[in-house]
Length: 48
Image (cartoon, one colour):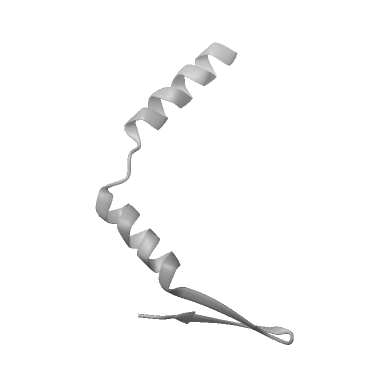
């Protein structure tokens, strides 16, 4: 059972590769996101 599970998992992971545009979008979004802590409140700001 362990061999079957490992083989299926590795086959699936090799087929999953994100596009370069998707990775770039996520990295740019994370760089632009700013979280501001103010007392008990948290504010999220997207700095474009």
